[in-house]
Length: 130
Image (cartoon, rainbow, N blue to C red):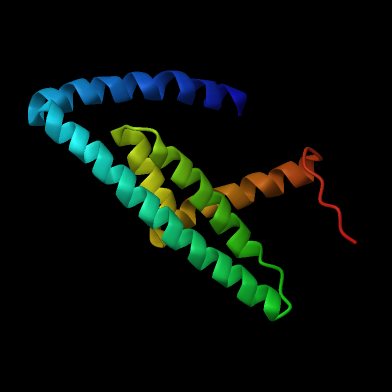
């Protein structure tokens, strides 16, 4: 997993710079800056809206006596999506928006659940219960 993270940290910024140079030459630097600001503001609004909805769902399920399992994974995806949207770039914005929109978040949430399940089964992650 560390290899993938290292690859992500090295390759994505290089791709983002290349896309910025290309897009800046195609649409102009001022439009590019406005687009970056627009996606940041839209992403912050969407992250706040989805985060508040997830908190409401978690509170509702706990009020009914159920553990908020699904909403925890939703919250993790929303948090990651919001953080990724803070970094300027087209690739990171696409990933961030995919993690924030409920319909496109489901595959990522499933992958995260499988990863956590794998960690629990291998002993890398321990869940303590009272």
